[in-house]
Image (tube, rainbow, N blue to C red; front, side, top):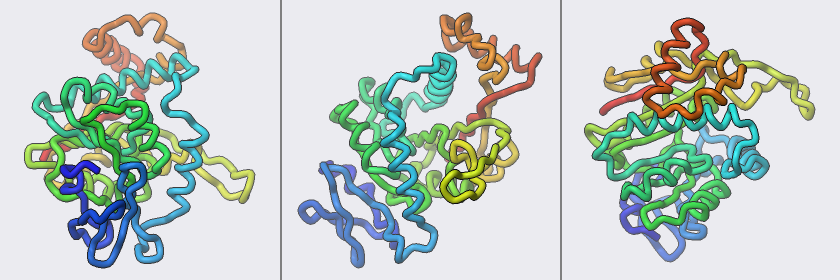
Length: 286
């Protein structure tokens, strides 16, 4: 177990520091297991009203059924995802030494930054996904944590940069999500969030319970006003990018060869003509 990582952890219930005893992390009232070297710091639902175990069960099943580490079959979607990653990379501070990747998915943050000497902690709500992330990218500077971002088990002022890509739309309380992550930033740190822009949330009837459920489990739609209102200190920047019309037209056959800077210029010009922006990147500076 990484001792430096232990120093960044806290009890998600009380906020107390944790001590290591064998394969268990201990606070005054709660114990948390370490599984395959990964601390599992989920709140105990019976003692925490804001935590829902069904939420964990849902995403555990989704991660098991949807392989985030497999190559995407849809080339248009893969190219769109690549551009989201490039946009995020362009906003990460050059002097960042430790990045927290919240909702780490296919662990692309670790894949990109760890070989460059930057420490990355992959954080996800399911053990399954964190195990796959560490197995896929077993760098010495790559660590993992299982936890809930709304009950963040991390000390304040711990990370130079926090990245959360296409996650906030799944959260029950997005304003609390931003607040918790912002607290974990070091002074002068940066929180980078991407999400679909002005998404129309489409509802479907669940075949099991006959209740309406949002497609893709997206609970919220965001624009710059809404994301800006979450800023804890008023320091908020944003950019919108990725044209939905071009994605539908499979234009990646023409644009995929463009370097990021040139693609960014073309994308911006197209969005002036056809205002169908697909993503928004929010940047909160501490």
